[in-house]
Length: 93
Length: 215
Length: 95
Image (cartoon, chains in turn red, blue, cyan):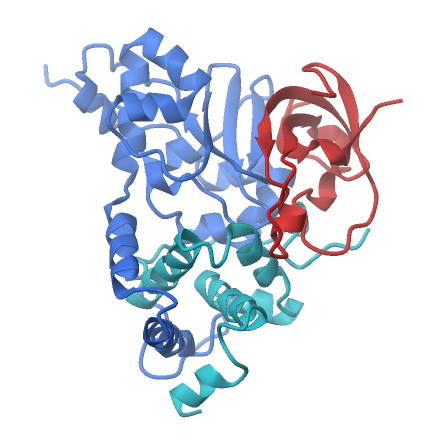
């Protein structure tokens, strides 16, 4: 596994034509790896009739709400947890 | 079935209604089923089995997991480590999702689950999701305004409580283990399970309060 | 960054949530079961289902109910795979 729990990562901001499961509200955002779930077939290829192999590592990544929304109403400790595939993550600089 | 008055403007979109109460999609999917069965693509038995499974699903299964976790802390640890295995332990069907993760609410952390991209939901353990879970406003606001959403559902949390929203974007399904209500200390596991509502396992409600003890 | 009509996280901050619920209609259960049956036979997977839904024109996506979206997707995917010919279902309905 490329990333470790506790590690800061950034979600890639690249545009992607076609099916993918990285929501736009986390693209380009800085988060923290919570855990590695396991590896799963890649939805981006499986959605087009391919077998989705090789499986891709899937991480649970958390983000501070105040980093995502300008007008966030709530506690400073509030977070969002999103499942993100490894190929959408980059080391945070 | 929810009554619905069409004689006034309303702010949520509706499929065009054709014959009586059914949308055009109803006749369409029936015709599609017939066609596919005729072609041998699927068998009618496949459909029947699947429908039987769907209608057998209910939040009672999820509630059993939670109630057991409340009374048995070793089970709770196993539930939090691997909810699929814990469900199988109780003879429950965790469904086809390869991983189900149970997350625990505490006095300082409150979880809420959504699927912003479609409507992923642990339906094997909770039954079919409610309409609002699949709706645009919930899918949109659960992530950007969870406390506003909770407030609409009647839940107010202190600022010091960390609200954690889980967006089920991939193969994982999430189930919330709500806090055991106070005053429930002498209740049996079965009685406890009756307090665990579907909405409390999604994270938009607290479990029901125990009935006051007659004195 | 552009987003699909389905990519709804944070897209609307005002709309109240309608909490009314309805029991699934027979045709909705049938639609769900059909996707499940196709899945079990390896004819259509969940990623294709989602991709098909996401291919709906945005206005249609918003107007459609949950299982109407599923049906749209099934027709699209089966059409792509040659299991359903163009117009075949309409002809059957006498449309």
